Length: 108
Image (cartoon, rainbow, N blue to C red; front, side, top):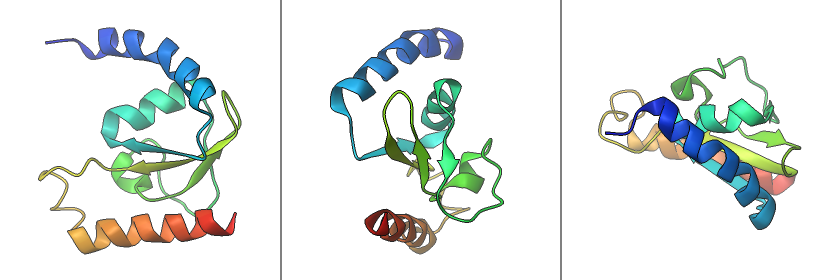
């Protein structure tokens, strides 16, 4: 089993390189590991009105953000689509938040 710190050390330097190489229009972070990994080297700013706690993937799920470094793009944090999430987000709620964020993205 790989420790979280070792996994983070392996992923962090590559993440910036890959983002620059791809220069995506949208980055989707799935789950409680991807969102904090992105936030360690960027400062995502919400483009939707929210008072959600950015530390909690369950709270920030479906809130569209924007980053300017290492690339200028949108970021959409989503809770991982595992069975453990469905108690908090039934499929309809999960998809509803995703759809609202994508509608905001289309208007950007």
